[in-house]
Amino acid sequence: EIGKNNKIFGVKCPKCKKVYVPPKMICFKCFEKMEKWVEIGNQGIVKGFTIITHTTPVLPLEPPFAYGIIRLDGADTDFVHIIKESDPEKLKIGMKVKAVFKEKPRKRILDIEYFESI
Image 1: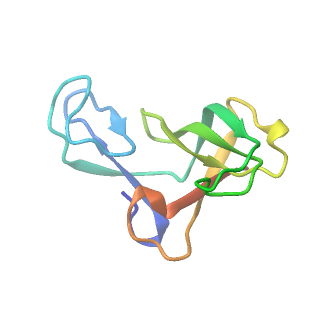
Image 2 (image 1 turned 120 degrees about the vertical axis):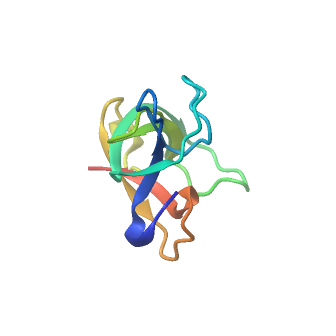
Image 3 (image 1 turned 135 degrees about the vertical axis):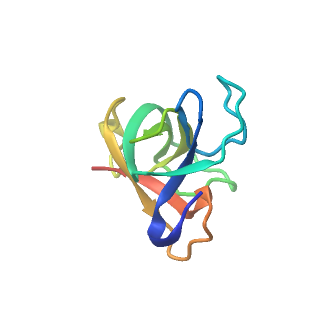
């Protein structure tokens, strides 16, 4: 969930306190219903990635770019998103990245256009 002013939100389990981004309805660990929304930072770390070097009609960007597994600061789960880096060889596991948002947000996770290194 993306709120006003490009803020990222997740949900927090009332039992184990695990924070899910993107949000889930049920905690995968405790099977508790999750209704508490918490604000998450727009920065995180790269947990893994793959570099895209060849183009196809369905790609969102011109190569080279990467799809990365990202864990946002304040979250306990990872998700996959685009990492745009001018030199993909500089991508490293553990590097810090920040979200870059689309100009016309619609309050959803796809409002994040890509992540870039910081």
